[in-house]
Length: 124
Image 1: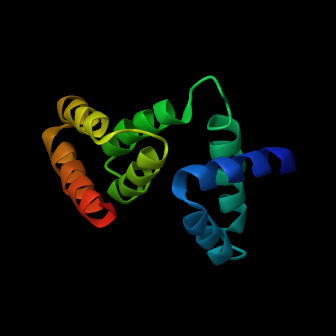
Image 2 (image 1 turned 45 degrees about the vertical axis):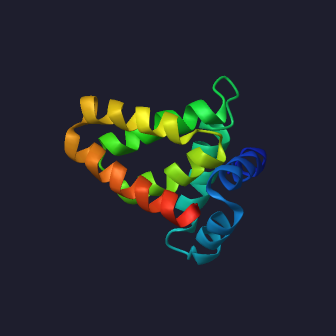
Image 3 (image 1 turned 180 degrees about the vertical axis):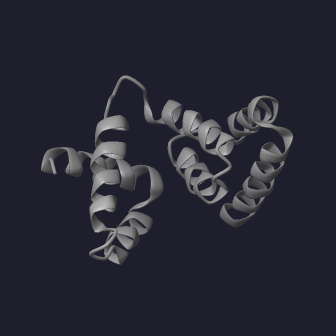
C-alpha cells in the first residue's frame, strides 16, 4: 500500500467523517477486514477525495445523491453528517433530497428526510 496515499486519505476521511468514527473503524479492524479498511482509506479517501479538482463540499453533495440512489441509508447518514462538516447547508441538503426524489425515487427521498430530521434533531 502507498503510505503517502494512505496518510492523505486518513486526513481527508477524518475531516469528513470525524476523527472518532474513523479511529474506531480502524481500531475495530481485524486480520480479516483490515486490508479493506486500508484500501478504502488509501483509494477512496486518498485517491478520489484527495483529488483537489472537486472541493469536499461538492464531493459530499455528489455522495449524498449516489448513496441514496444505491439505497445505502446507513452510509447515507454517515455522509450526511460529513456533508454538514464540509459546509453543505440544510437548504442545500433539502434541495439535494428533492433531486433524489425525482431521480432515485420518492421512497429513497422519504427515507433521507427521516434520517435528516433525526440528525438535525440530534445535532441541533
